[in-house]
Length: 577
Image (cartoon, rainbow, N blue to C red):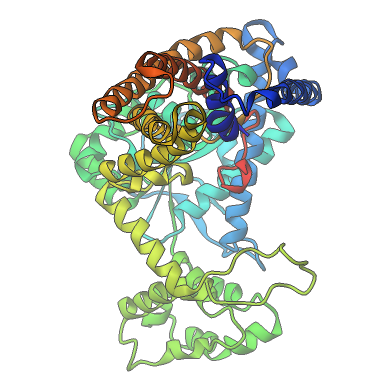
């Protein structure tokens, strides 16, 4: 609708304002009034029917406290949906999770038990912290820590990220029953502790991952910074080892400088964390440090055979081999939770035969087995499978071939590797293209828009002049237009947004003046080249100025209407569709 108003109604209004509408069109201009009336009625109906919960929250509470509580609740629900879906995708609970154990680390990287537990928590002065547990009680053990600061270590593929996901879901469950801050799982790969303070980075990531938080009308001004600084968020920071190695020591020092008692969870590879502590001599002085243990053969056997008799039959030779050779290459490979999960995913199809893993000629050692499972994963998960029989037409997710999936994922992975990041937001995918390419695409789209807009100008000044003016105006808009920083929607609410409209109008008029100047220049060039000007050059210049003014108002309206979502939703394309 906004596009139509911009490229059709605005040029028509320009011709009316310039008194350049041809005589044959004038008898029909009265139709514009009933159309405008209908549009006004439709806008009024949409305004009345717009949910009032957001508007009420916009004015509720002293200092926006109610809106901030609403932001925390919306964030908690979104995080729960997001990571519940991820747990389902990773099949963490189907048919049952792999039982991974953890315990207090024996590495020299932890503070004293007295510092972690604090005074008066236990009798006497504890000399050693003894924490043990599994994936089912990690949240319960965490909330009993007095400082609620935890470092989770493990070997590559030991299940640190999975445990961080389950901890996040467990803390959300605890929050529903007892209240408290919202756990938010974030990848640490983009943090530079030398250039950005931790809270500033967490705030930036919250806005990037949950862009609706910038909607000050619904969640109050500076919702993301207030959530962090008020202690309403528990950062669950995954992958300290993913930032450059030379920053590990600085990162630990920065983490140790946060306010005492601030809840925090960090995951890192054991070797990298031990090296960083040994290099800098700094430990997190109030954080408990636990380490994931390798998965035993018994747990792997239970995990692989949990799909019922059919799965146990298909996995039978492999399970027998694991029991007979608990120290062999296959048992060593499957002792990593990542590899065990990959094995079950790769051989989940009824036609797949996991017994091929016993081919000692193909798989001479642990590395060969791990490489095979990693290479086969994408093909296995993107294999064409028929939808369930109860799915109706149009309800099944789109099917992509493994070849296409591999090509696209390789492209995205190569881009992320070039930019040394592990963070990816779908609404920022346009940044994958080079800056020049993005600008060219944007200008082409603006030129096409200008060409359509030129049709309206052509009604009064001729086709040649109209096309030149439209293309020039589109080119001017393309030079200043920018892609939105967050997904949004058209907000038709007027109450409480007049000041914002004034700011956008000032900016839009500036853009309109630039577009009008471009169109006027085009008219001058056209006149110099001998084009016929209906009404003369003065009339054409007048039309150019009016066109710029109208386009600027339309541009301001589009900026004013564009607003972030008024509910924090799971960051997927469908959530903002």
